[in-house]
Length: 279
Ligand code: HPA
Image (tube, rainbow, N blue to C red):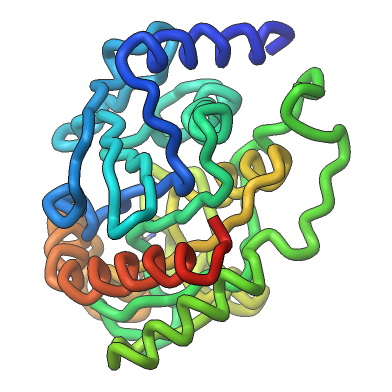
């Protein structure tokens, strides 16, 4: 981990050899937003495999690349595909892409994911604004020598999800009639889904949605001084809350069904961030 910054610089050099695009916003395309690139003006794409040292997903269907483009006047870098901690990468590698996008110039990190819902009033297909998070069992991505070039040793996490960005997302949801809940997202490691007893325990701790990503990204981004927001697509009721066992295909299908609403909320929010001068 001592040379984490050198590794980042090598990745940045490989990106800069292909494009001088400077993004304002970094957008993680979770399940349900996989085809988001169809809605933006694409300028350039870089497969992760062309960036030396960059972690590449082992999950079928999670083909990985950066997509650079614009929504209105706002410049975006999107991550289509990303690695998860359960794939076996060290946690510092899992968050390397976030840090790299910050070094490319992105000031805002817009996180999206598919998640299991812990509340029966947020059925599959619901969207949830992430207000705060809890991490269970995934190591803190800042463990190891501090990368001083990025941020401080003990970064504050009292407002990870920017109040100003959340306010804009709420307003856009209302304006465009897109139902939007709010709550606390918890990251567990996966890859197994939770047991019903784990879900009951999480519920009693104040968790509203559970998944296998996002929190470590948010911690690394906050450390590096980015402004952060996130939306979960509730793709299933969490274990024990419905009679059916969980399977990846159904999670994917429910996320796909929510895609049109999810896409328009993300797009309208990005345009509004630009208009408000937040990026
Ligand atoms: N648990 C964990 N991760 C998930 C779930 C879930 O129920 N649904 C989608 N990702």
